[in-house]
Image (cartoon, rainbow, N blue to C red; front, side):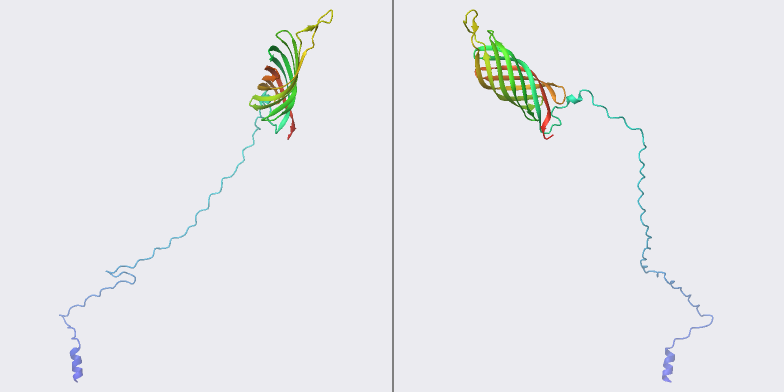
Length: 253
């Protein structure tokens, strides 16, 4: 009985009813599912995935069109006249070639104290390359002294020379023979006879320089040569005009 009275005292009083009763408070709707609650930070949403597009293929190479066929070009021009002769004489020669040299000129010589002059011719054969040449040959000279005494000379000479462009410098030894008329006579009766000529065999040499004047072809050249000759008791210059042939290679071609 006592317990029932205590429970009744603790129970809430019933709401008054009648005209003085307050209307019930309207219900406040809560947030819809998935909507943020006011006062709270909405969670970050992941960015939508972007679609993948492959790169475009490279453009194709441009088509090749061969040039149109047209008329043939003009034929190559022929070499002008004289072009063959203007090329150096040693062009196309690999090692060495046959050398032939001939010429003639005037000499002026002192034989001891006697002055003499005259003409001299020479011929030589040897070998030539781009940097060196040599030949051996014969020289023949005939002249007179200032007193009218005849002179005859011949000599065997070797020449070694080095070309520098159109100029050639050289030297060489020689072995010679010279005879000169005697100035005295002997009485043989009716007509006096001149005594035997003076004869001398001499050893000497020469220094020379030549310059090419013009080329007739690749192998043929006209040159001017000056030399100074010295022998036993005789010396003097020689100025000559000559012809040189270089061809028919002797080896390596």
